[in-house]
Length: 159
Image (tube, rainbow, N blue to C red; front, side, top):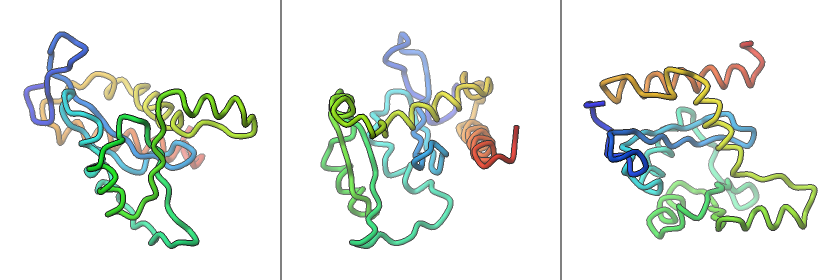
């Protein structure tokens, strides 16, 4: 992976790797995607992921705010500023906090696991699981294709 948007992977003996950041809607359909080097902290990908949304969002209003659920890894002032700039109401939870609340409220389901499921769906595409492309543009193109297929499957248009 000599192309751009790669960096030494801290969990794989410093080999070059890539990281993807996916924004999903409530049922796990991907609506935003960004990639960077594996050594890039997650919180630095927030702005790029939000800019990657291909459709126009409705303007948030006090009656209908737009919420964004994130984990504790995104609890930085920079992230809060970006989310405020984009008009989102952030919900950032510490590790384990959501699980404890779910044990008390049996009628609710976890929100962050939706994104983990989407990453699992992306990993089922063999071309995505290991990045073979030399350029980051090609890798991003295959990721967009996989996201489109997931979206069509969720809509019941593909098998």
